[in-house]
Image 1: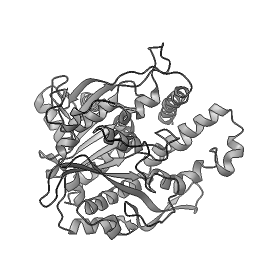
Image 2: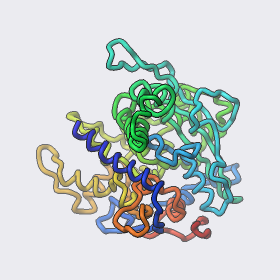
Image 3: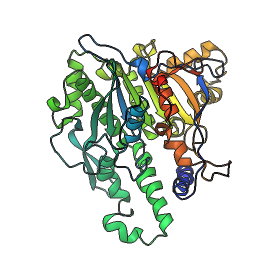
Length: 462
């Protein structure tokens, strides 16, 4: 309970900043890369990663190099609530990095909208559902909540030039789980519909913070840390299988308006397909979801299409939640060992993009170092990560390479006050910074942004 209260307190400060940032003249701070560190290296500022452009690869018979990008959002309303869709800022930032003239809401589908019950014919999105409905027991004995639909996923192809394109698959789970599980618990309290009368008794700004902080935000994290988190991961796994088939030419339209997770993954596992490299972009809680799913795939001792998708991939974690939410993973039973394929040169690489002023993010390398300093093995205290070999063994046990990108870009709340910046911008403003999008696209070599041979490097930051 104390831990939950601390989490609420952090979110309260974040949300206060969110509100204040809309009311006070801000001071723009240019984006800066402070350090790029690698878990594999004992040296500071020596990290490397490929970047999306250099993950793009050819397939015989296809005209363009391509990388398939899966985007996973975080807690609800992490972006500007006046925007129609989650994940749109990343899409717009990707297009503008190549000087493409786009509108802020040029990418649309039914995914990310509030109406998840619509079934209009449209070939760029698909729903993933359970084979059979799941029923969750509630606090009232014998009373259950039903969950059948899981996620909605859409696909947008972004042609960069005659030789390069990005296929972006955005996975949306927030509204479905809100409607089916969260609303029954906290929906009587938000400032919408029949609950407006009760919520309207609050002072205006307390009401706004209650919705943004707890009803639409904190409740997502609490739900994920319980049994519903298993369903979210299964849903994302189903989305990955569907995306693999779509990327190989078996389109959403051929798959159907709605598919169940088991059938679509069985089909993907049994189908011989060629795939361009997959990569992942995650925000906030989405980082923990994808990390957990990948760990499960690495430890299940089965070869599946999901193993193929994550092999050699990079996961760009914007405001990751791993250190904070991994407190829920503490267990009295040993973890299953990695399967052999997870300890090869094709292991996925986590690239944590962390704004130094973000309340909710913790860099990955110090997190792993801290655990290693304070843990025990066979009853004996660990000696920490003192050598390169120690670090390599830690990577092999984790199943991931890890790189931290330490950033500063959040704008001041008040231009003349240098001691405090906008907490919301620090947590969710990565995709709005052209310099950071260029870093994600071009990658880094030995602690420096890579501009050699990167097409995005030729465009001015805007």
